[in-house]
Image (cartoon, rainbow, N blue to C red):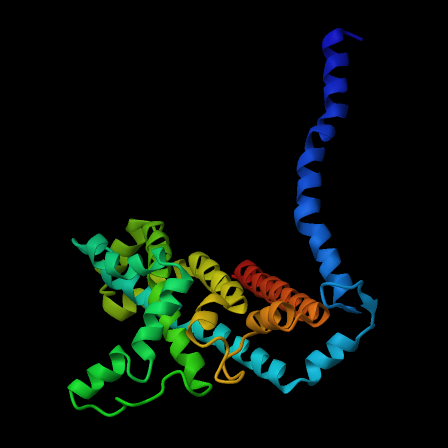
Length: 295
């Protein structure tokens, strides 16, 4: 056996050893906290004394608590709202500005809010939607109804208004992703369609929209995962209130853990939210991939 072959075999056997540090870091930062959270969710733990095993008590309390059922309902409302409003508005912006001479500049005002953090979005829209805020004053100035409406004072209206606020931030980046999808469409089939008389909505429905399917899958998938974890905007604008009318699961997890010091209940909500996010992502991608393969 030559020395070159012997060195190659030795290097092949040693190669996995070089990956051990990376595997160790991932396990330490990802899997160990997940396993610890899973264990804590089955205990009575206040963060100070040792956890006491309590079985399914936290999960039974979670599914029998009307406030947490309300938080689950609000979270589902966020999913529906974020999959429709920002995606639809981003698609409209992309289609109307794509190919336009000033398309880049026309999209810029919609893209700038994405550079703002969720906390800043909450502060801005909190100022707009307060009873004596900018929106109320503008309606009152023009003599329009609704000037004294408490936009954030009752559910589910407060959740819907916060979805509008996040739509203002997210529509621009969705438009940018759709523009990338439009740029990937070959020009020849579109020119042939135009020669056949396809214009306007007919061109979009029969030629553009079917070829935007891959990027639409990405945009909707990101919207589902992001909306399930909604926290910062709600915390800044209403802190889940009044009462618990606008709480989401992520915000309930934070309150149970860091406000009420019920780490066991907070861990149960965190694990449930993680499983819901994972299941929704897998089911959505499997449906999209299976549907794509059948075409």
